[in-house]
Length: 562
Image (cartoon, rainbow, N blue to C red; front, side, top):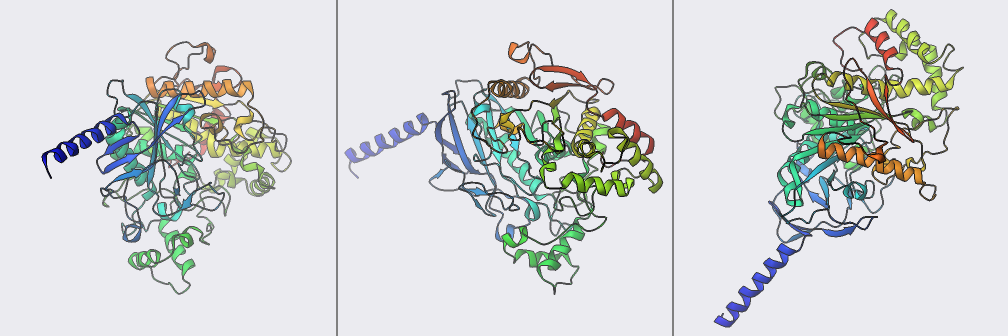
């Protein structure tokens, strides 16, 4: 190469280097470069999206049923402009332009700051953990569009994690480790802590958030000591770690049940033999299995109901154990990651489930037949006291039978599954950190269930708030945006992002927020913000104090859930 060519080569390299520095869609991670895209929010704000960034090695082949591993470095520039991969899930609905695959451990980052621009103050970060009963959903942009959050000047991270059998089956002895889906989330949180500064995010201002089982997962991250220092706040929407549906107590039993359902000739009780069978079974067959809830081993009050593949309490002596204590006790003792939380529920959560044909009527018949079934295996009660306590709980909602008062069974179920454990969590944690409790009561079109009534019960059903925060309604009737819906959207986003930025949802009086000051809840003052057409501080939400009186009388400590 002559001198002239050397100079040309050097100049080209310099130009390429300058181009890389000035190109905000190009980010260099420790594993290699990624190329995102410039996007435009509905308000015309430019932001930058990086989709399908690998945060762990693909859990395929020998890595199936193994904890997440570090991703290898790659050469060239990785295209991160689309979401095409989601984790295997139960087939409840399709997600456009995606493929279910075991190679699914990816996350997305969306930022209003130009990556690489060190002149700007780093922004607060919200990390979203999707819901879906630990068996469904995904973190892709097709489900969770981030632009409304980004317009409020924060960085948004969404993620996939292993679901159902692939994420939560375990033999309980370390051969098939437990809580792999939770460990995926933890691995993603470590990735965010390490790398978010490259996207304009502040690693010291990370808030983890989630809805339904995603909120339960957030609660579990609060109690795992392995998360210490990874986040400074948490948001829990319609879910908590102390609800009964969060935990599986018969994981080993169900693991071998799966083996026998896949191969009628499989009669071994050796975990190594089971792992070999599961390693050689197509992932789709593992997910779409025929295992059903065994009598007495359900996570719901009703026999035969409830998810099977759920988080478990791990043996603390096993390598990599992530959740090693009761999910309930740490909130009573303060042995948690002591960070402020914003936590709450929708005004009538079970309205979504009650849309299933005959669901409320079937529940009413089941409960009326045996009042002890209103207690189930939740509170260590004697058989006699279960009947007495069950009767008292029903009397909170009706003086008749549930079959004679279907609205009452809907209200009971909303409180039993979501409201009561959420308020209990808030009360317990308030002894150790700041707690902001809310009830979302605004019924609008963006929620996706507007106009849907069940047995004369009105209210806001499970997941309706998502349509305001994420532009992700449960359904769409094609109606134009209602002005009050738009106000409610801005109120929710302002409260939530204020919390991310300042650890206080109302750091100053704001006319948009009716100049309300969101008071912190304490054990002796159960205050909450009622989010409706107006914002108003109220006290003693739903029927919680009546539940507490019954449970304090008949439940036998130590409790494992509420």
